[in-house]
Amino acid sequence: MDPFSSPAPSSGSSGPSPEALMDQVKTQLAQAYAEEFLETVRSKCFAKCITKPGTSLSGSESSCISRCVERYIEATGIIGRALFSSPR
Amino acid sequence: MENSAELQRFLEQEKQKAMVSEMVGKITNVCWDKCITSTPGSKFSSSESTCLTNCAQRYVEMSVLIMKRFQSMQ
Image 1 (tube, helix red, strand yellow):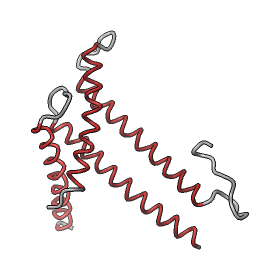
Image 2 (cartoon, rainbow over the protein chains, first blue to last red; image 1 turned 60 degrees about the horizontal axis):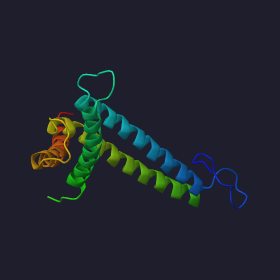
Image 3 (tube, rainbow over the protein chains, first blue to last red; image 1 turned 90 degrees about the horizontal axis):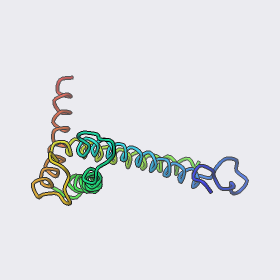
Image 4 (cartoon, rainbow over the protein chains, first blue to last red; image 1 turned 180 degrees about the horizontal axis):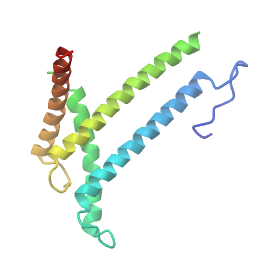
């Protein structure tokens, strides 16, 4: 079943069950978050790694991009911990 | 109705979670620019990771200060 259709309603009520609605909302929120995150990573890593666009991606540009993605994900974790797990 | 109260609670929780994600995303965005000035390496230097932590905390403190100033001008 795809995330946007709901299971058959229970107990004869019309419309999707609350559980199905909640699942749909969670799925859509997760997808929206992922898209926004990816767009940010694209923008940051293009800026850092592709300084002079050539006719193809060089090996050093490709490895820079890989490292950049890892570092950005790591940075997101560092920020999360800085804000939510160090009481002052 | 029980369903509606449960849904309201759920939506409120998801809204809070989304706001937290947005804040972390925004702060990571600006602090990356401030702290990661050279080509990304295979790991962060300790000055880079310290900078990121400091940046996040200073950003939040700044936000609080801005709100206070703004409110005192109303």
